[in-house]
Length: 284
Image (cartoon, rainbow, N blue to C red; front, top):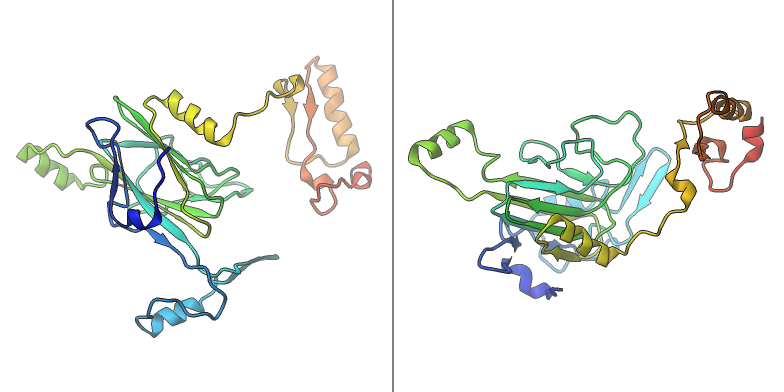
């Protein structure tokens, strides 16, 4: 386990278990930031450069946000935390689910960053970095020699930018490298920023993918053994109309001699999507 004191990571920090550097902290643009928690209306310790920054403090979303009927207050104000991490010698990054995108993470130089925020999205976009059901802030860098991991332990809304010194290079730049015979060492750069919380990062040294997940499980804990019925077939759909609809589905399984262990009722059968079921509604 590696412990870093806040004041030490203002300068770049490099990790190398052997002769090669496999991970760097705060090296690229040195975008480390730890937002200062304060009450609304309180001044920051730093001097404000101009009036525009004061106006930004009053902008929507700094202290509270409203989306339709949902209201999100931010008692600590703009207290985001951020840091950049570099993976020298790697061209491929994986992880940070869940997104309807490719397995290998793409660069975000000319597009939106990857978003981690649990959402129930109906008819989500394909090839998108938008947030979906689950958020796991675990990233893996993989090459033919080694796999390393990064676990950003922060449950707040998080955005991740990814750039590459090779994938982001223009066709002309690649042609010039070929003509000159240059062979640039590939490097993946990532910038993580969370809406709130603290910087709490774990570096998983691998060296194999199996080792990464073993190290990750040692931090988060292993899953419980599921009950036997959970391993069977589960029947579900986006809401059944009423009790008769559920009975019909059950009868059809018997009619066609198809076994199942569980039939799920969607949240619409509850009272106001509460965890306390409104059985009267589905009976009707």
